[in-house]
Image (cartoon, rainbow, N blue to C red; front, top):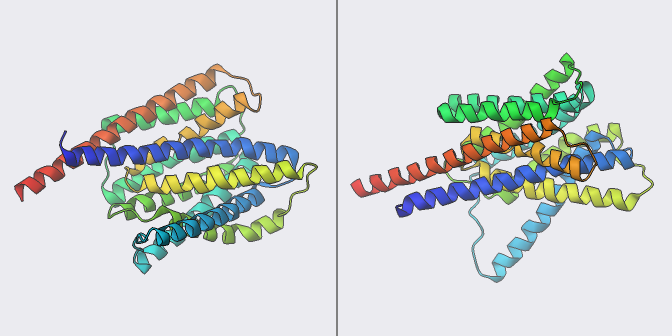
Length: 328
């Protein structure tokens, strides 16, 4: 393998690894939220606000530590983006994140967890694939289309298998709105990342700031401070939600989404319900069913297939760059 091809494949591999870790971390948020809702009167919008606000504080602390370390090591900080480009990234990501989270929680309340999850996460890859094709000319190909179809089938079996779900039009509309917000932040990250990815730490911090401001009035109306008989556990869970499935996961997500095709990003992130299902069985005592096993197997197969295809695309791009350099 030539050096440029190896470098391109390695870059795609690192990005896929970031996305896989982010998807698995996102899946732990559901288990933490279930424990919070069980042991306190915290509502979903207030939880979403604390998630953004806590993630913002953690990332600001990380930025301060990094700046101090780089000054001591006499190394330059990453070059900032142009102001207009940074404004588009921060506002677009922050607004999309707010819509994604708020509409999803509202959809869960309106039509139930199972239907809201299937519609939101199922519509996401389709909207992203269509948007990537129209705005960036990205093609899925036959293998990619098969992988997306398998992933959606796995998601449906995993979430709806064995449950009597109730479908309500208002909930479906809210779930589609949530999927649109998710698609928007994914496409924006990919579109801006084609010319070189930005520093994901400040990008994510500013996006959380926009999200927290947007969610604050909704959280105040719902009840910002939870009443609980076990405040230490509630605080610990809130810190975990802010740290792992928020600050860490979103930094990794934006770092990976900048260098991987948008449709592939959407399918890899379907590892979230796989992680949530594993925790539901092992931590929350839910029953392991045939639908859980089948849906998990379909999703993992689709993610593996698309990851392999994405690495091949990166290797081919590296070979093409090497040929063009040789011809020049």
